[in-house]
Length: 507
Image (tube, rainbow, N blue to C red; front, side, top):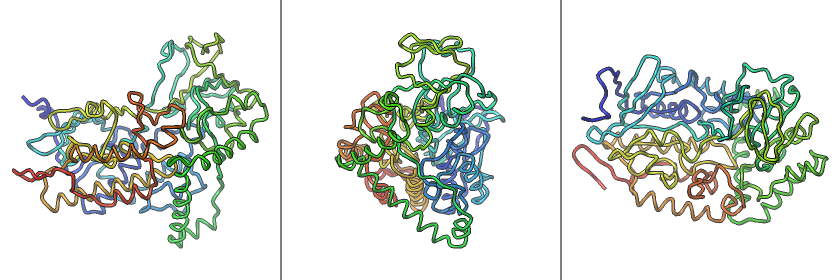
């Protein structure tokens, strides 16, 4: 008996394309499918609203660290961004508006959580099991698009006693808006991208903030400002002007690559000097400044942007703890030097599971192989989009697609374009399924890792969420210019892939 066969009580729907996730990637995919004349698709979203990471990360101070004009779809410009760097509510509103603009409402299936997806070889379709308020549902789709994103499942540290803490404990991406932090003693664990925004936002209202730092990040100043009414009017009346600004931002960001890849040590040291000057100007206390100075190369971990993080850490009601955490008590956090600090709430700014994505454990390809098994030695994909052994499956922000220097919407659009072009070609040529050959995937990843070998992420002397802890290999970032990634994914080429028509296998 086929374990993947729909049960008698399951509701079964047949669609051409099933997209998992309704954040930037999923909504962008839906918009582009409609523009390509493909209307038979669903957007399966586990939450009650669209937005992905910009729905989930509603913590105080949440702001994008890429300029707004660049951090948006090229085919859906917003002439009225309020600031150079937009806040979470504004970006979330932008994504909500995209649903109406592109007519995605009828395709949305909110509160539909995908439990598993299995490839049916005989039918050349994906069987996708979904749980929703209406019960269990099975979607049979020719094509499956994973648009869940790498920053979706919080990484929760394994701290002794954390489960027994009597106060609220919550991750920055699952902010507890019901708990009032005013006048409380708060422990913030972690000093990454969310912490440098959370700390300045809550520091003025809490009685005491204990910041637990494992390693200090490199922080540079953020050149943010309010966009004027004149700019709004000009961008509205002259869209080409906003496009020109977007291109200028794009190429200025491309220059940052020289600081990360290719052994440009002098450029890296110059950027590091700028960060050190920013630290020196922001923190007067030499002892605190020393503890906030990284001991690894600039760029080895994610470089952060903030003008108010250092002043907040230097405030009288903030303590920086660098000894590490030994355990958590009922109402305390105990550092490794034995000091107990009374705490009313614990905020986890501890990042996400990026190198072992949960969706990989629920996708089964040819022969029933789990994607997590195929990735047992680290994630890998062809051009960040397709994986050998998993036909008609496409990723957005797949392995080695992350950008440390520019807007992820650029990568998302490139991979959407690649996937939609592949789907269109398959429809035009009556191809039932297609997958990348193992040798094609292996050759691509060998070239990519050679390019990675002289990058700061490999040679910079740090451990980071960029690296797979099982192998030490960087499986998350793209080690080159964005324009090269876009050119690579401009169109789908069937070379190096196996395609099957009805009753016939072509190589």
